[in-house]
Each structure stands twice: as structure tokens, then as C-alpha cells.
Length: 398
Image (cartoon, rainbow, N blue to C red; front, side, top):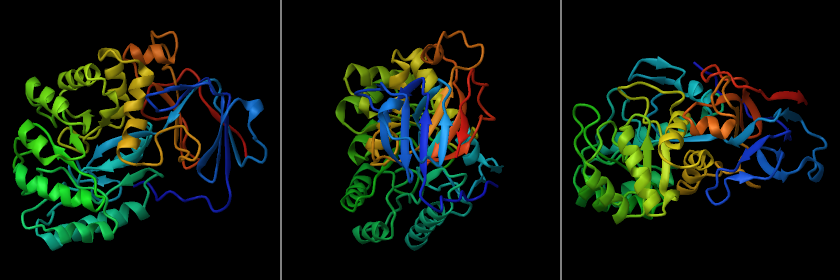
């Protein structure tokens, strides 16, 4: 199992220079005119041309070698259990493997695969607080996994949500995976959660595993969660008319997941574009699940949406970074002064038909990942999971 990643013990200064293309993660300005980033003590302090920024006294210097730098990718929908193990497929190291796919931050949609998951209110609160504490204290390979996402059960009252929030719980697991499967009760509990600063998501579509149920547009709209979880189904999608109804009738997040219906994901994307609301689109994998873990699930979604969904690749990367960061109030996901220095450094895969990086993504090829950085610290070098990159970054000085 991957070890708890150590934090820096003293002041740090990271310089990334010789950047060929800098993706910002922000829809309004997805490509930045800069070739150098400086981060001090894990936060971005300067973005610009090498001659214009202070690079003296760096503790780590990364030569990007003309490659592409983007914010670390965010997986908006995972189901963790214990450290880097999942009982769904009895698989180890899935989080660390996802880091090799460029994912530096993950959001739990509920620790629902925990064997013997408690369904009584005392037990479910205890499990949520335990998960929040465990993943906060033990960052697998440095990945920031925001966990502790209880699912709703009958009998929960406002005081339960107040207690959870006071204990540090900031998320609700997928509404509909617990005992509460009706819109009225879900709406009341979601509003209590929101009152105390707890974000919510809902299971959308057909059952994911035996024992779960169909959740259609009516319940999604009545529950009014902050995120419409896997609107393209996890796995089974709603009819197009219900997807359009959700898109048109609320302004909540539209989450597209890898472990869902790809045609429905493209339909949702087209609908969001028609509505001029691409800022609502966020990406997740919905793993570990029955279909397993997809370490490259987020970059696969980016390539799929860019190649088949008629959006520019630099926009598709925003779905996996800044859109999610803004919706979930995270301090990463955008290359901006003051934000966390979380990056993925990539290049065109070797022998891609694309003439350059963005064209290779637009043609549906995956990027070659050469390095990941979290809080200003290099976490991985060349990915063991992606195709080999044409060019690689390197650490050239300390």
C-alpha cells in the first residue's frame, strides 16, 4: 500500500520553467501566456515570463522542456474505503495509480462500499467522521482525498447535520444510496446539510448495484443537491428528455463520469453548451465500482469530450480542474496566485497523429504524463500508466 506522503519540513520554493503551454483550468481564460511558475511553501506566488519573475533561492527547479503544464486533475466522484484499498475489487493502490493518471484531488461521494456499512444514525455519523479524519491524516501518495460523506438514512434530524459539520464533515454521499429515496425527505435533509455548509450530490439514473434504485428527474430536481451526480448514469442513464429537463430546470453541477453512459455524457455536454452553461460541467470516475478502477478515467473523459463533444481540448481540461474547484470551493484546480501548487505536466503521446498536444487530445488520444506535483512537491515522474510522452520534464536543481 502506498505510504502516507510526508509534508515538507521547512520553507520550500518551486520553480517550473521552460513551459511550452500553460493551461489555466479557468474557462474564461484557458491558456495563459507564461513560461514560468513559482510556488513558495506549496502556494503559487508568480506566473509569467522567466525574465519577469523571481526564481532565486529555489529549493526545487523543474525544467518543463517545452511540455504542457496544467492544474492537477480533480476526480469529483470516488468511493474510498480504507487507505489505498477497495473491497469492491479487492484492489490495492488505486489512489496512487490514479495519481499516475494526473489526479491530485479526489472527492468522496460516499464510503458506501465499506463492508457492513452502518445504517443506524449513530453509526453512520461515526463512520463519516472516521473517514474524514483518516483521509485527512493519511494522504496516499500526497493525493488530497476529501472524504467523510455520509448517505442519508430515515430518522436523521437537523441536529445530526449540525453535529457532522461541527466535526469537520463537509460532504454528503450520494442521495439515494441510503434509505432515503423520496424527494420530500431528501429535500429537507439536503437543505439542513446546506445550512451547515455541507455539500451534497445525488445518484442519478438507474440502479448501480442490486439494492439501489432508479432516481429520475423529478426526484433530482426536488432534492436540489449541489451536484447532479453522474447525470450520464452510474451506469444506466436517464432518457434524454429527463437529462434535458434537469439541465434546463436547475443550475446545479452536471457531473459526467467515466463509469457511465458515454452517449448520455455527450448529450449532456451538448445541452450545457446550448444553454451557455459549460461552467456547470464537472468530471468524475465513479470508481471503485463494479466496473473497477480506471486510473486514467479523468484524462479519458477529457479526450472523449474533446474529440467527440465539439469542445476545445483546453476547455475540456477545465471540466476536470477549475470547474470542479469552483463548484466545490477548493483551493486548487486553477493556475492562479494564492492557490495550491498542484500540477500535472504532460505532452503529446509518442506517435500520436496530432501535430501538437492540443490536436492530439482533440483526436481522442490520451496525453503522456511526465510528472505530478502536489503542494509544490514533485510526487511522481514519468507515469507508469499513460502512453509515453514525446518530451519529459526533469528536476534540474535543488
